[in-house]
Length: 133
Length: 133
DNA sequence: CCGCATCCTGCACGATACTG
DNA sequence: CAGTATCGTGCAGGATGCGG
Image 1: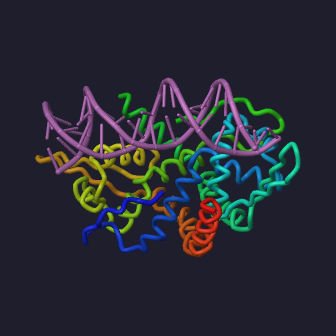
Image 2: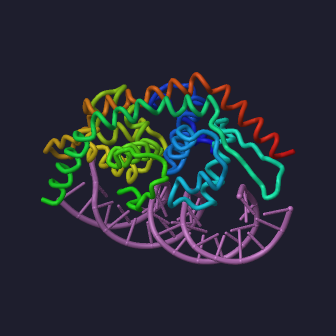
Image 3: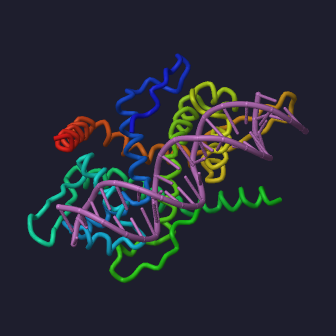
């Protein structure tokens, strides 16, 4: 959760607000965690969904990770979790405005990837070629 | 390295080019890996740097992780590694244009974090409060 | 249907020691 | 100085089973 509380000597990498730094890192880490990005996409494209519907749309995810990821997202205010008191239980998840805006913030990265896909792959082949040689 | 090659049934989360998908995920994963983002920042702010200089500016990093992270960045074309054939060895790392532009692509996320820091923290406190109760 | 608890496994990463 | 090699460990995450 919290980022390294270690002291930074004068000559470290910058004087950014450590709270922003920590949040940015948390956020990127969460979005990078293999599932969050996909869940944002699913909830964005299909709107409010119940647990099992989401699971169906994300092949390969275990319910443990689905629960866990949704909980973190809820904690960060990215989704709201609505429990309908019926039997059998029905729980629905909806992306908040905050969640939508986070997805949009990452659009820049998607665009970058589209624009530079070839460049990166070329760089990788070059590197791997040199390594083999 | 490669992302889950598993088949996606018709009702999965979207029809995006899987190569883009994989690259975006690789990228976000790398940037999230605790050090890459910091190294981009250091190299951006201070220009070309040699190995030990970078290490000094990033307290807490082990040389193993510094080497490893820089190698991945090099492989992806984000930095160039220049070996000066002198004794003692002198190796310098410089952010490429590609690396700079990736940093800029993530600016949107930084901005988002600055804009929504309070909202996220409030959401977290709310969630944690409810959990405790 | 939803989700928690438990167990198990692999990998990421730090520490340490050694080379050109 | 700038690495590589080896070892130890903690934790992320899958599988399974139970509970409301």
